[in-house]
Image 1 (cartoon, protein in one colour):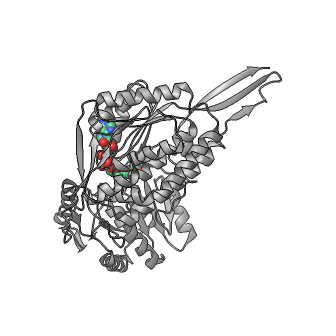
Image 2: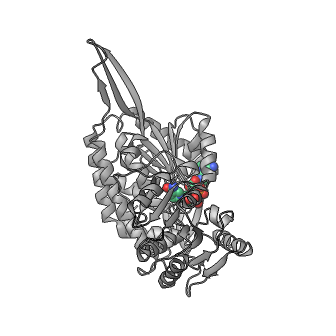
Image 3: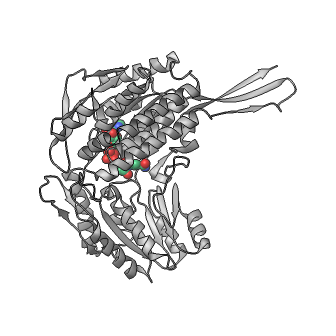
Length: 494
Ligand code: NAD
């Protein structure tokens, strides 16, 4: 498959062909079936993918197991693994435009955000390569004069990776290079809605010299492909990013064979604004936080909790900035808010907004579906809902659209209680010029990440993950690498 012709084909409305990657070969499904992916913004055909079933998933798992047991990747040096990962990073950087274009066509996200996602992901590969050369265990020579204890880190084995549609390439890159750095082999199932950039990565891996069978890709649905990947005896670990409901089902399925499970799930992330905050900066970050990826983001700041003395000022400023947000054709580089992934999802977003209004909330901006001239897909207006109370569904559940809920507080205790009054705990933010306020809030908030006077800043060196029903385990950074190890103790009488 040639990448340039693949993307040219995609924009000229010829479908990009996605096949399974199994044991180093591009394969059609055993059944021969395919399915089509249409653009949620443009309505055109983007890709045609092999429709995988149990037999395809099984073949990919067997290939990953054989590759792992052969030692072709798991027993080579960290330096050799790093060399391949660095080549992949270079190849990703050389293909940003092509990958970003397919990602935008399949997901409806603004092209500028697809470009940033793909080029940012290259840095994750580069960082993981550095970890491949620096991982280490411990040794204990204080156990007695003639005994030495050594704790080593072995790759955990075959890892199933199941990813969602909203950041297909970034999320895969939060998992795959770290698992590869540790020496694991993998079977990947991208979302059925966005298979193309994962398939393109498969091409780049070949070019970088990845041995056959180390990375396998199976396309298709969760109920068929996904369920084999989470229950098969030859799989040692499942790492999943997606909804909390599916995460719970995967955790239950994987328990029958006691696989290790890492989960990155949903969020209901608040930004809390204290009266001494820099309101201009807070409003900027709130606007960015709610509309980024058209609000279809696990880290969306879909609720803000604002001190009641400044709520009018904050809402006024956020509404003003929201009106200036450029929405429309995701292929236009100026667009900041793109399409909604499906008509059904557009309806779900609207249901949350209607229900909140029925329960007494007030629309400060937007509040309904919209059309974009010349485009057939589905869109939703940038929306601000104020007067939201904590028991409303819009305040508690993941809306996953460009919709902001505004709640208010009077004291630090109230702000913390409202923040923590959620089944989720992915991220939170605090805005204040007082370091004590920021520190107190950061330590009391139940969240995997707490930002102070910023939102969504992140670095490969840090860690990412959620508490409560936002997930378990960590990705990226050293802690992300550690997830892919099995700890082994060696005791030597000398
Ligand atoms: P989803 O849960 O519907 O699907 C995610 C993946 O799981 C897809 O590949 C799907 O085919 C697969 N799947 C579905 N049922 C399965 C099953 N029974 N067994 C195995 N696999 C199965 O999620 P989505 O709609 O693609 O993504 C949106 C969700 O993902 C939101 O809730 C969002 O918050 C969450 N998300 C979380 C993070 C994070 O890092 N915490 C990042 C991005 C998205």
